[in-house]
Amino acid sequence: MSLLFSFALVVLPFLPGFDGFSWHTQRECRYSSEDLKDIEFIHRYIYNKLEQVRYNSTLNKFIGYTELGVKHAEKWNQDGTADQTHTNVDGYCRPNAELYFKNILWHTVEPSVEVLSVKSGSQRHSTMLVCSAYNFYPEGIKLTWLRDGKEVKTDVTSTEELYDGDWYHQIHSYLELTPTSGETIACQVQHSSLPKPKIYNWDPSMSDGDRNKVIIGTSGLVLGLILSLAGVIYYKKKSTGRILVPTS
Image 1: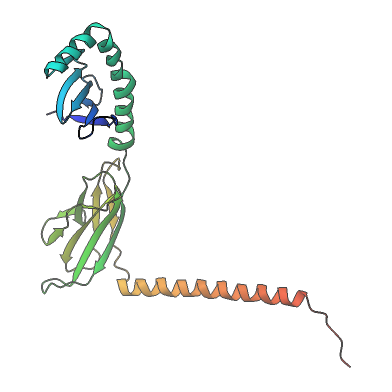
Image 2 (image 1 turned 180 degrees about the horizontal axis):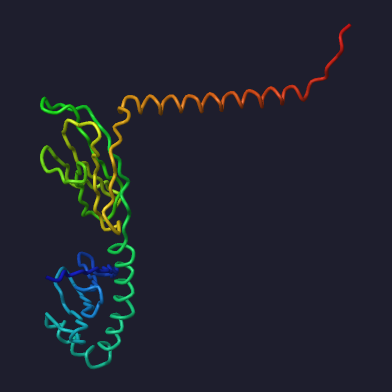
């Protein structure tokens, strides 16, 4: 089944002397395939929310919907306005549609993925793992848990794909289990930004608490080195301006 894509430009001119009345035109580009073979340009003329005249590029003519609209349609179909308006198919619709496919529909961003252990609230299992995928576009992602290369379907829960409000999305999948020594547990990610499914292994070598301690300790060491270096630089600058006086 084909999908219908369309975008529209609405123009709202201000007409002096017509207080309480509104007049606007609306341009639409319609297409249902990426090759744009069926692209169609529609131009509507609307007065007081009532469509007066419409141009259809497939018919290459104007159609009137009111008494005044019929008169305008007949005139524009005969004076060459219809043929001139038809140039919007290639001049307006096609380039904008190509930009839409290139920058939106075909644009993909690979997710940032991490696999961590969190505190388990289950009485049956000792561990809960979470596979989190962040900042991916477009939506439509699949997270699968693998245990020694085989898909795990039980004790698995997942959030919906969450919209971040900035075009990007995130999702989280949870696995409750009791790990055994030597096994490999991984999260497999499938997304349109990836040429093939990507596998992220869980590293049980250290707990999350130990990992956080290492991160905090490393950060503290780096900060200490920076402060020490700043102290040495400050001391040398102060020493440069001194005049040493010998004492007897």
